[in-house]
Length: 246
Ligand code: ZN
Image (cartoon, rainbow, N blue to C red):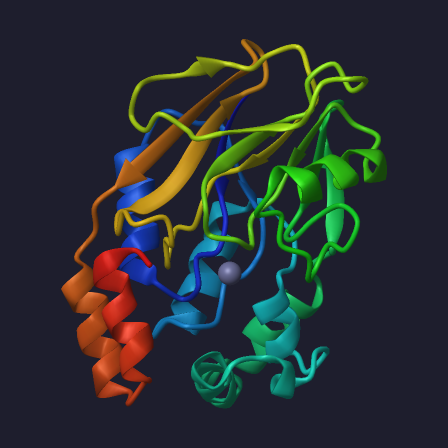
């Protein structure tokens, strides 16, 4: 099976559509790693598009905050601004969709899906190999798929004994890469708000038959998303960052 792996859409419909167009016909189903809302101008549209994809999906911290399960005070003022706006515009039906998302799930035989980390699925950021290393004990499968950092990376446990966990940066649009035998934590980056310096939407195609992962980027009309954010009075910093992928 070929799975489209997406995370952190963050209500950026133009970015999501660009990804779906870019990889059309190259996947069998979709695995989504959380945060469909927050930061962006299209929360209802993105929840509905996700529903149309009929994907395996889990909840992220912005999804939980929108439901009121996390204190809005724990978000920075920019994120909080859009969180409150999202709560005011999201339809009851779409709230219900968020409410039904699990915090983690297993997929096929070898995969665990969480938003942040297997140790703390909603909140923990796996940005460094040391944090990744500590998390390998917290999932039973061979591979774990995470999002949350908006930073595409693969953490490789090595042989799990003396070797040290390594971070590998993906080679984008370089074709499918064969996964090593070791256990991995794989982050496809963010569809709607990349933070690795590349503004293009980030995602991956995981083929669980050939055990390959293909990291991919899709350009989208950033200015169109920014124009809507401006129209809705979103904080300038959130609007500007999309152009830089930071
Ligand atoms: Zn996010």
